[in-house]
Image 1: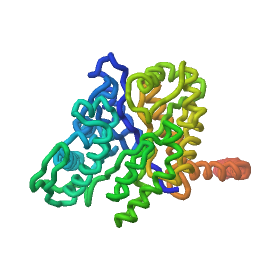
Image 2: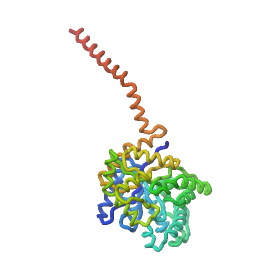
Image 3: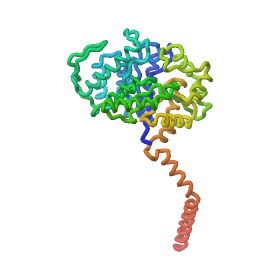
Image 4: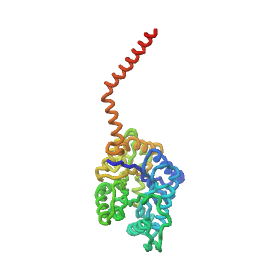
Length: 392
């Protein structure tokens, strides 16, 4: 197994009515915490309505997070490019690429909340059409072309970037996908990565994984592009603790609010979740196979399940949530870094296998080596006694 990267997908999800200033500070502190734990990536969402996913500009958030971190890569997860002038999307990302010295990534999507796009007079069909048009323009600009184009919302005349990206040849780019083949088609057409947001949240999303990669490869072949599974990110749900009982107790803090947001507020049917009370919600996550609330063993099994279902991918992104209080949430990320990462990183022999093998080898020889150690102590003691006697 090649080295599997780990990260988060931070929408974020905060209860409506709480202090947004402190909530945003928690988000920044979480990214800094993950950087210290050696997480690889953090993807930041863009939303403008519904009162829960309160980051309006992932680019501004990334600029703040970059100053608080050292190595974690920071991506827009995603920029709703259907809402924006594609020239300015490209310009802002190139600027961030320089400011972060190559730690920025661009995720593209049509926008997930209809309450966002309706304020711009766009329906969901139009945003998906604009995704294809604007992504094509962005790719051309990033590759150094001068572009003249007219879309439903913008006109460009001899548009060009006045800076080249810091990254060579270009920073990582992905297209979002939930259940439909729209994202894989665009990713394959342009030879960029895929971000499977609904990979585990619904049965359709999970079942679509292998199909999505097939669509991406087919479109890449038609377009003459090369694609890699290393550029495929899957988003999943987890909360772990030292025991399953503790994990269940932890999530009673906030899991109901998270479920109710998708059930009653966000008009995003692809992310619909079941469950009437807290116990049903926990059972739904675990029994439906869409996530893991439990121990690190449960988390490892979920990652392996996704690997087997998809045929392999490059990064496992944990969907950030506040099911548990901040302390228990941070602890969950710590446990995953400590006990899940090593089983999926290190190459043909993982880090976990290497240390466990060394432990087993030492244990197998312990009895004989212990006897030799005791004999060495006895021998040196006898020699010293003999030296003392000879001097006397």
